[in-house]
Length: 314
Image 1: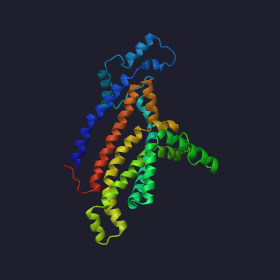
Image 2: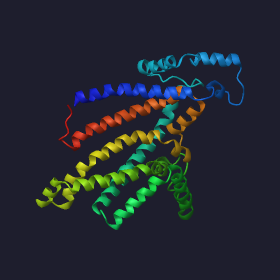
Image 3: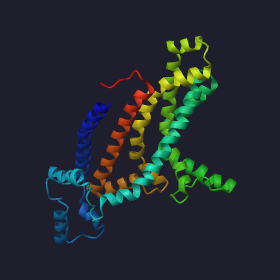
Image 4: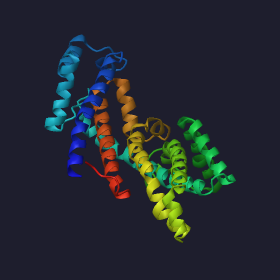
């Protein structure tokens, strides 16, 4: 297992370099001048603009700019500064916790609701309940997150408060503590819940048709024990894979959700930084997201051995 983990970490190095270099090139290729964007509607003095370009290495070739950035990250743990001389690490520290709370809330909802509905549908395959759950998941997959967010914000955030007088689901900001993440967390996880429900139903239905399930049933084991200990445990492997990969997707895909609910997180900051062409901020955020994605997949791979002892790492 130790050698496997070391090998996976070594394989993650080119992934990290490739992802950061790719996003660096994309931001570099965007039209517009980041120094001009820093001054807003005012036209900067040419001499001052040239000094700023030299200060931030904007006149250097692309690969040299990338080397300045990646060497600072690797050797000093320094993500650089934006064009207002604010450290990128400071910018991310103030907003990363918001996105992390939102992503973890969405992941818990996704696991509980998605696996629960999928289990329910698999045990009632072909019945009206199964059909209703599949139809609901198809609806969530078809409707864009932007529409789902505004509709639930209106119904559960505004109308429900008018009907009951209780502010159960805040519609903006993080002033209500953990309740502030309930509605945006469900909106962010909506599509993933639908996919996970279908995946759970399919995986468990196939597992319940296996020979060892029929053998366990023939031995007289209770249906709950057959499903829980033999069926669900083996069906969890593709579900764990999906959840592990989806953690990075939830954090990276929170731009729309954070904008709808006015959450000042990484997604919102990423959008603003792309608009202002702040390469250090954009690449810094992407670097952190890539690391989270790599670590999540590594943890998922190690969980395989716990769920299925037949899996061995060479």
